[in-house]
Length: 262
Image (cartoon, rainbow, N blue to C red; front, top):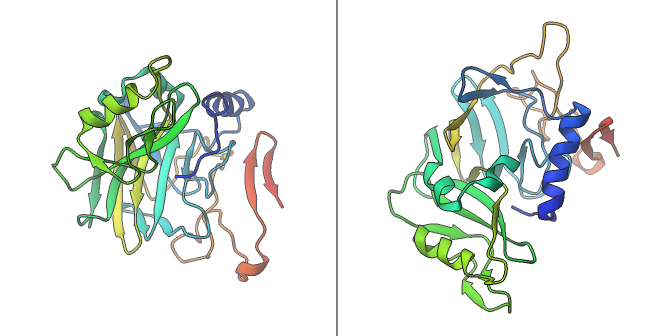
């Protein structure tokens, strides 16, 4: 996952969206711990306006495709479907990683991972931690090297280590400021993957991906995501990019004022 956010801007973006009432389609809770997410509720790009909603975190140039089906969210190719969540900042990293859960169909080893992005240290160093959802082995993989305050490498980029070793390295990265800020959570699929994710859980809360988006009311629906190019039978029934020429497609981003087209 790419991120140019600072710890402060990640939180401010969320507060701005809530204050303006223009975050992704209001989540409709099925019960105290489950939220349903449907078509139009995953933003197609990651930026300051979409980070704290469910979104596609992989760059458009290298991303795969995702579509809502009756079985859940189908991921084909390279995807990072995740959401920022400022509430996680108050939780322990080890507790959050141990609480992650996914229900899926068709996931073979190496196709689907849990993923959790975080900041650590005094200067907001960034990395993500991921783990194959099919594996029972205690091993988490870094997206960037974990370094101390002097820049010395504690855990290499792409290294897979036991959870306790990863947590110890992050917490020891800067003795003067050993704070860790979990930023969000989600799933990662790689090139060649074809898996369907039904639910993603963390810290006792579950998100369920469903074929039909819950409506805010019978007369008014708020849209916080547009299906990525190209137009397909699977995304035609939801808001999507319908232009047929990828060389002429502009960009869309959700702002506090609405949908910006450039």
